Image (cartoon, rainbow, N blue to C red; front, side):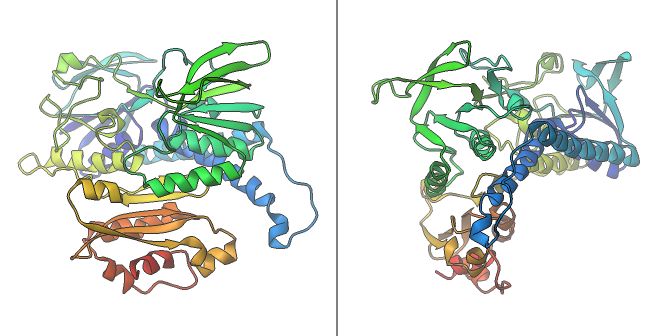
Length: 463
């Protein structure tokens, strides 16, 4: 069977490699460069900048660790960007080599349906037509331009623009206190910029999956670093001047106080809003339905309204979970279902770890306390402060906590929320425990090495 995959981001290349491993003839189509948003304009470049910011933050703490002398380093933005591009290049090259080794045909071009599972590809070398036994849509999503906040890519920036600045902004105002906004705010504050963060809702990271206590902790730590935070407010107007921008912010609730105020800044970065990358795909020709916002509609087996056409990754929209590792899991499910149409497997979304690379780091999996109660569960929450751990004291990383949500009576672990050093790595143990139906007692009785940060899970489970 021939499988055609549209989009070579984490969803698409995982699907392609899985299909090739299963012995299927595999064609992977990408209009830009392999790797998708995650590699070129998302998690990987952000983490590259974050790594530099972490070194700058640590350098500012030399005296705390008994180190004297030396000149504090300053960011060299062209060199930082060059390092970021090297990281991207290495990973992109690895994807191409893996595709070649597995026999995946990688085509550059714009894909468009011409009916059923038939595709036209328009690329640098002209157009060609293909037809597969199955098609997997993995075209992803892109930033959404908001009225009045459209990027000019010089002063008003998209999140992608913010990853390519060759100078540190004097004063950066970030619109949106979600994951991207909070990560960029801390990066550029570490680089030396003044930073103001504006979020329309009442807290940072206003996502159902993010524990409210973590939002409060993050806001406190960001304020300690000198980041100005305005929650419950929105940008009402932007005036351009010779030397910068005058931004008017006001309450998101028009009936709330305080009144609007003006902030003079050098740059604005907009980090809210995503839209599906479906333009030009001609979905109607294949009979593929979308929801009211244009996101692809798919059933629990990831099959669209067009038989034999599957959708995975960010193109499914926010009703699903828009994370690279979730996209990879969906890719493997879709290929399994293509191979086993008589007994397809539903995609699970109940235990999906997330990692937010702020300072402190955040790792979460399962339900928050609020979500568990809304689902009708009777639960209890146990908390261990990171500063109670010997390893945290030795590292000088005291901000954070371990919070476990367990079901009363059974003790079953239904949620875990970690803020602190290496939280993105630590959450994996809790996710595995939930996947296997473990209880808090199971965690408590698991011997953890000492001194480690992982002991926080054990100690929280003992409470």
